[in-house]
Length: 235
Image (tube, rainbow, N blue to C red):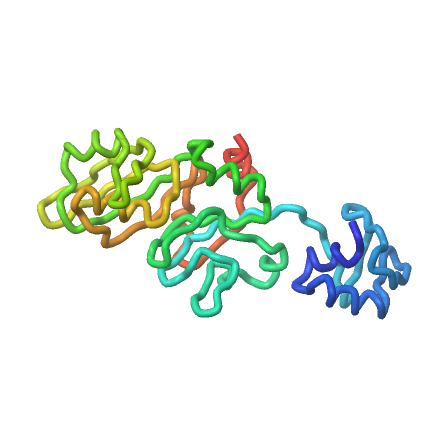
């Protein structure tokens, strides 16, 4: 890997900024290097920047308990993003959110720089199940189970893929349920609930495939995935 790319991949510096400091000299294995196209051995070379050794990590996988009033984006001119929550040491890997959660939806958000894994998890063709806990105003009825299982018709005429509804509590005024879907259309769960003549008042994603939100994570907290969790995602 080129030296300028190696530095920008492992710091908050851009490629242009990396080239500027390389011109002043970078210690690699105790040898002063001033060429941005110097080929770095990512695993074995000791690259020092500002007195610190840069440790190469190709892919990063982060589990976050996304809070409300946070958008699922890498940057936004107005709103706070999930990436803004990360510490600088984690932002250097240029991670992005896998799929999206609405601004006012809480719960499991996976951030990574592994594009292949991200595509596999969000592609409707892969049928990766996402579990949501939902609270609604209005009554969820037994008859809704088969409607959801057959595929809910949204207000714009789009028919959702077959899903599963698990009613936890129901009354005329409010209901609680788990819903399992394999796609991620814009505001899909809210629109599905609207088609069932209810209105979402609270929504939280619980899992993506076999990756389950860590209950010990408070809203706005995050951690890196364990090897066991990563193995489940890669099944």
